[in-house]
Length: 543
Image (cartoon, rainbow, N blue to C red):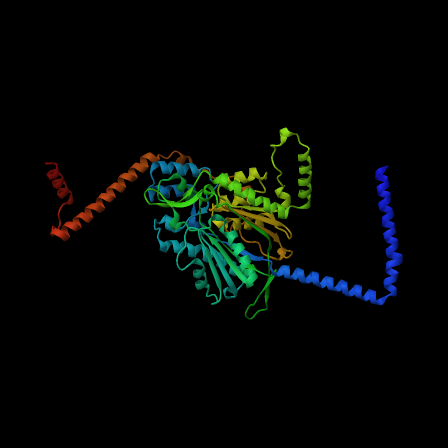
């Protein structure tokens, strides 16, 4: 009865308001033109103000025009895990225990048979010259693909941001790009180093700030270099990088407007429509904690070999950083359905008994919040943990697993390979939200949320795999890449012993040559038998 009385009161109030508007307010406005004119002017002013505020907010927005990822030539750079292990054994002469460790890691990384390494590792020619050649190959390859696709003149680009964590030569990569493409003298360039696998999203944050000051076309290039960062020592925590990382690069073009007009000589202007609009970017940094700061740490082992230590504490540190990052992301982007679920959860939680206070905390449905997910391809174990923590299904993880299988861990560029997979296989549509999330040394967890623009259907998807355009995780998982029976049964103890003996023989031969040259220079003893001289000297010492 009480419910009926409330409904009756609301119905009565509605009828009274309708009568007041129809029979009192509207007739007065019609009989008084001055009041009606003021009302119209006020309405127009409110509309203009709202439009100007929307335009001002849109001017500060960051749009992703287009992007490309480096597509290596399979005939030249394709490398299986067996071939990588064979290079480590035959050229780098790792000891047996190190070979066994890398073999065990290779068997569970999630990498497929068609990942890529630079020629410098195959040729055992790891110098700064070949490291530059690798950088030029992947960087120029990605940029050339992007410029050819968009038709944009490099001289129209007003800013360049590059990131490469472990190889930072002088001149920088950004200067190398400006020189190669003859960009204008007032181009702004930045090179980020040492920022780890999440550096590409940090680059987006930098570009967002740059765009506020001087809008224009800004290029972001993300890569990593393998040539000078193939660890030569025996520390297991440093050997991980040899097995997981592969060659790759991405080039992304940003603008401050949802479209860009390309001027073409002898032809009409061509309009490029942006693919995505940046909806939010969240950066989490746990460097204040020593455990997080040192869990991924570049150092030298006892023999002076430089490598990156990847500690066992990485999953724990990554979990803490991810948790803090997710809290902010979900607060900003939870849809109304998930907010209602959260309120319902909180209400039920308040009625729980004391025994159930330790229950799991609320976790939003990621699939209802974001349409496409791009998680950094740190390895199969990392992706398995992400799937478990976020309660994801196989389809939601397909882009990350397919990228790891096809290209390996390409460091900061991996999230762009995954976005290319979504464009080719997952059917990105206008209004869809994309969540990119990456981890990096420091320890950092950075994420970016993109929304496909209304004009997305007028853009061209970025190629994920030019060799096999139909590549998908559904096909890849049917043929999981595991080490061959020959490789699993290979006797590393015997082969490494032979390599060690050969190395000793080679060192002895070099010593004899240097000793003979010294005898000839100091004593004029040409053509002497070094072994005989050494034997005679040893006998005299013993006597």
